[in-house]
Length: 395
Image (tube, rainbow, N blue to C red; front, side, top):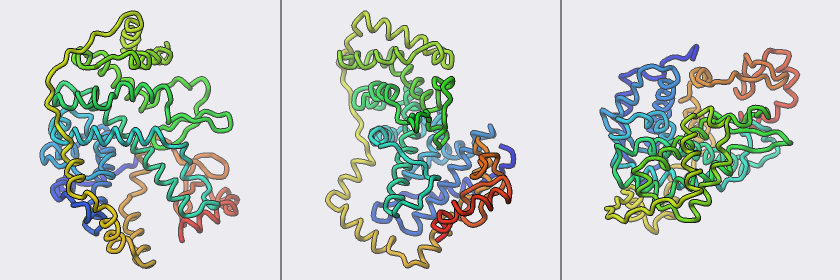
């Protein structure tokens, strides 16, 4: 965390959170909405900075005090940083059904994605539509990973949450089965030219054969959630272990080896539970009365804007997205200007890599600010390869 400065002052954090407002669907895309998105990005960066630097988590404290949790896209990273805490989870109970459903939908989309490409790869041969398609897949992929963490946090805090959340996780969405499928067919692992790569901390990293069983953050979150959902007595009473579910869950045994258990020792208890399950039938859950809480936000959107989606899209396209070239350039400068690259880069665990010699990157291309180099000689040598992509990104 060396070199990181405070992104927002406590006074700015309080003002930003107090100013958050709920936007009706037709207003998404206007100037006020983009201003709020910018503030949410900075709040998200501050929350992540607080966690990584092990400082007082000011954003989390103000969220609990002011009870401000809205928005969708920009706030996912913020939620991942703060919902680990029990007091934040308690303060958002009325929206947890919507959050659970949102996470489930995104994880299903995440599982159906084809292998995503690296956005840093050469884009000169791609059309604008293809580049936007890859960016959309990248956003969906990262959102899916973060939603796994959020469902894991919900599973870990079930004792303080409404029963309707437990019912949602175990009955409506069957998260134990969902997470089992993710463990058996992980979308965050891929093979490229014979090399195994894992998606960790926002990028694909080559994994050496001897480290293939090392658990990533997302894998750890899934295992912790499965421990809670399968071993908790309260969950066992509610979870209907049919023959098919039993057959699928027993596949987890092949993943619970000595290396995996050494990283999360409590997984030994999960393995013993699965061995017992293979020999005996699970107890049949007793039927009970459950007053199911409906997702308020989703139901409101469906009721309020039913059969109006195309009309709203046309209005937004005309009023907010049909910008002249000069307006679009000014808008893009404003968006990129909201990011302090020094603070963002200082929070990354990996050092930049020189695009030419693969050594430690010390300076970036002053034009596109995308490629890193160890020095002037490597930058000059790499310029013929980088020039077309650089020009494309700065048009």
